[in-house]
Length: 275
Image (cartoon, rainbow, N blue to C red; front, side, top):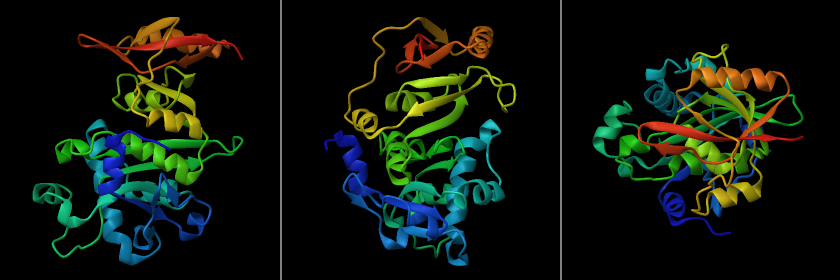
């Protein structure tokens, strides 16, 4: 297996971790892309000794989603992520983290463990072994972009660890996360407009994270749509609502490739597909 050098560089420097219920770890793949978990990085969410690490992961969520009004309380971390499935991510040794970064994360002076720099959360559903991914975070921008591709590698690695194949998710039109999601796979739109979500420009999707798709995503070659039936502007809420009406009438819709940037606008290549 060959992955792009930028992802290999991350694997050379960072360590994978799992935070959750140890019994669940027995069902996961703990050796992915030639990288194995160290025993000390398999952290039980039920042990007091891991509370400082748990707090750092929670702080990461506050830094990445708090300003959007979507930061999670700690009980949500525990009830909806750590216990049902687990939280995966990458971390670096404390000595590799800049002092200002440690201060931003509010790392205690006597803390000597792994410093988390990314995470992915997903929970299994009752829908034919499909999962729902609900948090992808990377602190790369706070580290001076030292680890380009960290977000994509985190999600790809997590899917292999958890054994995720088909996965639902929700995000917002115009979100930088769509650069990652569309690099991994086409995205079947379950909804193009979600009034039930915190942000009305949200969408819900289903993606196929097969091993083949993940390896292609990590190859370094960008997934560009070769054709499209519609270019949807991320700012066009009216068109998103119209597309939602079409979906509710039975139209099958997918985002067919990475977003297209023109001036200050972002467009998504949309295809109408048959069953």
